[in-house]
Length: 246
Image (cartoon, rainbow, N blue to C red; front, top):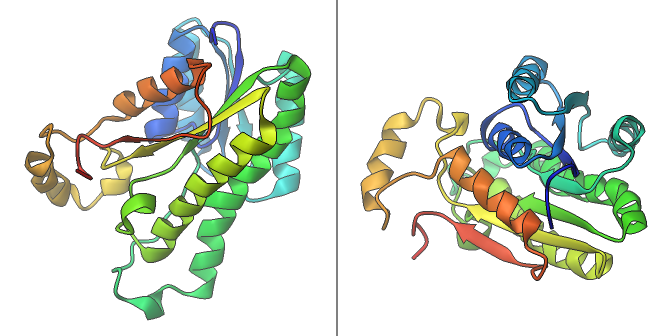
């Protein structure tokens, strides 16, 4: 799929991988809707960066865990730009809990992580699907994680939520075919603010990776754009982790 002049919604587009995806899509000629929940200042910075590149962009607020907010956001984008062609389900949250501390994985943490990381991605996909179906083409990329493959991660509920994202990807790929392709990128360690306060741990990890480097948000963004473009792929979970899981 040619990305030029396609309308793309990127959830959690104000920071990290989300911002990098927005900038890369803009460089490829896409029209951007930068979603944010609470990070308005960061989302507006992303908008300014894209505007300075000469791109078309708006920022739209919505908590992706709230179905009605998602539907309103999608309708707002479609009213502004006419349709939605691409969705990058990037918005995710975590809680840092030692894996063996089962008591710390409270019901509230389970609910909060699944509401955003899993239900939020489903709500966004469901809301954009009618526009893509009408256009007879569309592409969705969900952000998974190697945590969903290995069971290791910032917390047990986070790892399980990302495994659910991988399953959601396969189910949506079946449900939305043939018009809409749905794939998932599963990054390993990425140099984002999620490492805040644990930078030393990140730097210790890098030499142990096969490629001896931590992926950057830009690395992941380029691969996401490639997945959006690839018309012969759907339902796939693609690992991008510098060899971390080998």
